[in-house]
Image 1: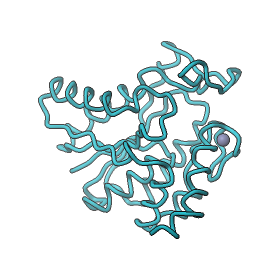
Image 2 (image 1 turned 120 degrees about the vertical axis):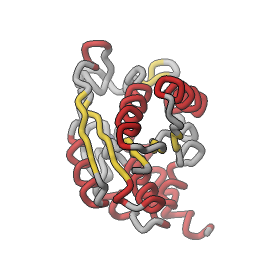
Image 3 (image 1 turned 30 degrees about the horizontal axis):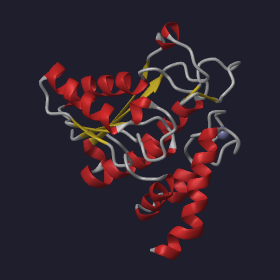
Length: 218
Ligand code: ZN
């Protein structure tokens, strides 16, 4: 096995999956999805469908159902308003990517895989500290030390805007697939979503930007 993709069922991770499968072949790629108490749990259903579509060699849905005992946020608590408080939105799940990457790494090592793909980005930075490059570098170092294994955390979108991501999806021939079969919306509405939450706005603005300008530029 070459790579494990952290697959949420959203746009970013789905394009990551397409990239990893293109590079290594689906038979050398595994995917891992976390059910961590998020209110848009429909994501896991879409993750399953995507894993099946790409024909990855293994897909695991792992429960981190203790998470909501440790903290709360607007993704866990449907009564909490999705908004920005200071620099941090209420949708931040403290330490999420640290948990996800470490868990993915434990599984990856058992499969003999070194690459871990994650769709985090600091370009369209929404105030999520664990999407920054500095965090990913530190996490990679920590995991190498923790497990004596040459992990490589692959972040293809770290410096890409959403429009550039859509351009890449188009280049890979999966634009329609990603547009129609992923859930990015905080309200759990697939495809172009509710159109109102911050995740939808970011995603839809990027797609519009790509469709309007991207093709003319290239
Ligand atoms: Zn939405």
